[in-house]
Figure 1 (cartoon, one colour):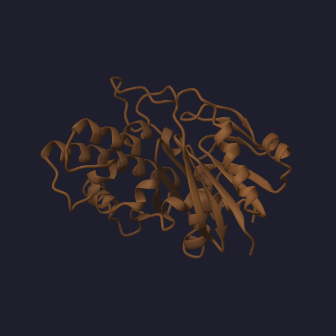
Figure 2 (cartoon, rainbow, N blue to C red):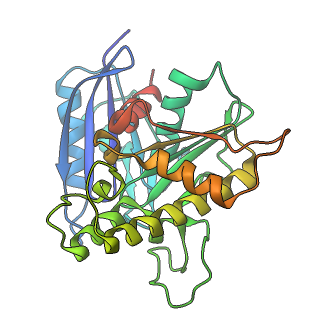
Length: 294
């Protein structure tokens, strides 16, 4: 097995590292502000560092649409910039590289390493600036015309008073339930007992009634999203990832409680899928990207 580089581009940061035998050996992060500054210099820096570390190949996951034929990122709701990776690699004199959607690569990593021998129908969701993901159907990743798996933009509300999503619609899954929204809620609630968004789902913390109500709103939104996806894809497992998975969280328990109360899936021939936290945690994107070139 060689040394492979994986780059996970998010809405506010770039995580990159060296992967050996399916595990991250070392990693770094670059945080960038969404102030109109180009992503290109930071992405080029990450690529150069990996090349300097003598990796055998580099895979990159982007938060949006990618063009496999030109190896270009075409932009997405949370990162509206076009980047030609092929041009960067040509300048750097590096040949073994490949790009894909970040949700797809993370889904493939979790599925290939932990679920391939157990299930054929699988959905991965990543909660961050938005909600990304990937869908495995009959053991194959669904790609559509290249933009399948934008799970954060399924509509879970028709309330016209809601704030507009970055995609231009209202009622999108990610505009109501992304990890970014959790963090905004914690800041707005101004509780000294909470330091980050995922604290809302930690049962060991004493929450005020206002905080509990906000937490329950998020659980309701996420539950609706999962139920909608299940009805479309009839999957066997949900895996939830994102940077919050490095923190203590009872999110899965809270979701199971809500879904159990609100649905009628307790039928002899049909039951709601199991929900798991990503085993690769926040490294899923880096590892999945590296798999593109292995």
